[in-house]
Image (cartoon, rainbow over all chains, first blue to last red; front, side):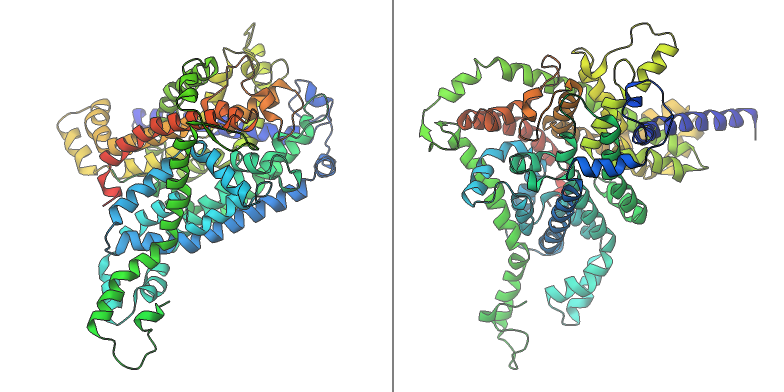
Amino acid sequence: MTRRTVLLFVARHAVAIALSVMFLAPVVFLGLTSFMTSDQTLTSQLWPTSWHPENYAEAFAKAPLLRYLVNTLLYAALATGFMLLASVPAAYGLAKLRWRGRSVTMVAIVCMMMLPPQVTTVPLYLFWADAGLTGSLWPLILPMLAGDAFSIFLLRQFLVTIPDEYLDAARVDGAGEWRTLLKVVLPMARPGIAAAAMFQFFYAWNDYYGPLLYTSENEQNWTVSLGLASFRSMHHVEWHLVSAATMLTMIPVVVLFFFAQKAFVQGVTLTGVKG
Amino acid sequence: MSLPLLGGAGTSRTPSPRLTRLRRRLTPYVFVAPTLAGLALFLVYPLVSAVYFSFTRFNLIQAPEWVGLDNWRFLFEDDNVVRAAKNTLWLVVVMVPARMLGALLTALLLNQVKRARGVYRTLFYLPALAPPVAATLAFVLLLKPGTGPVNTALSALGVDNPPLWFNDPAWAKPSLVVLAMWGIGDLMMIFIAALLDVPAELHEAAALDGAGSWQRFRYVTLPSISPVLAFAAITGIIGTLQYFTQAAVAASVASGQVTGGGGISDTFGYPEGSTFTYPLWLYVVGFRYHVLGYANVLAVVLFVVSMTATVLLLRRFKEFTR
């Protein structure tokens, strides 16, 4: 190696390491705070002077965290399942079948994907109030039975890349469209489906606006995000407990990521466009 | 699944060619039927009724009553909407380019690094997955005036009056940008993939012609990834137009006031309205004041603005709808 390449190597890694520290620091600090005493959180000491894992138990005692977690899990799991049920066939229809109205439908899907949720909030809230479902998470779950615009878009982007020859081969063998979808397309589209499912799961897990809108009056149905944002004592934020609860909401996300890192990375790149 | 009327797969006689053709023509609609219903119910219907409601006065108890242009006239007397729109515009102008630049620079860096690239990539990406509420809480803690680690470090470095971050009207929005920069990982991944797609031959040819690294970036890399940049910019703008959670939570937690999930809107905008974004105002008008007619005026305006960006996207990327 020449001197120049050595210097470049060192410089690049120095910057990358510095950036790694910056990206990690907030979580590390949050983790440390979650083990401090309440008094120590008010000081500028970074390292816990004594370790208090019981903060995690106290966080569960102070707020119905377990219920929030169960609610969030139900919301995320049902929304994801329903979304897949409707979005996969729709994406297949949009990517691989020819029919009148297909491009108009694609335009509508892109519009819906790009629509800020606040635009339709009032009419939809009234709609769900009429149905007697405000106060619950159903207004966020049931629409997924019609598919999710972003997921359809993502899945379509993926399915378009599957060569038509595979589908034609199945059709020549006499398979109908449903069998082609199930036996040929689904196995090939597994990474795309995994990515769409994970994005949907994370979206629901992280969602704050939806649960705030529909369940804020009914604490029974709060999600972790909603509970977390309201997690404090009468007079100040109890940082040791908030940190513990916050760590708890991050852990499932990180675990899921490490289990499905490959599908995820592939999915993220699909959300862009090809250069 | 088969349509009973058109003869299922189990029928012994061969269906007539006309029926087969009809069935083949109709099958696609079966695939997309739930989605078409969803588009009608959750896109077309609420958009049409939002426009209608914007000409009415009503709340959760009283039925809509036609008031003509009253709500629309109020839009021009509403100081809050001006303040909220200015804050949202500020975020669009600062946060979107900052995130894109940060993501592009980290992507370029990781493209140069060979060893441990995967580790760096994971570390840079993970914060983008953090729940926004959790991330916001972490940053309010991190940037706490007085005893927060960032200000402790700044003091140790000899900064006399470190910023009060989320508690200072001048610094609250920049603090939100700092928070947004922590989550650039998803954009970075998209850019990394785009950079890998830049044909290596082009770089080699340019290098042979004596182009330096800046010139290669400017004349080879940038044109190749420009569709990806355009896509990121447009979706970034639309995402920022709906910026809600982080602003709501940061204000609520930094203010230190007690708020329930339902009463969180009491602290919206803290400090001094500096984090009061357009969607927050829409939410307050609709769900705290229950002035639903005017809330729909705000919704229609937001729709028109975001639709402009969407039209740009659709025209730039025709392949999405082909």
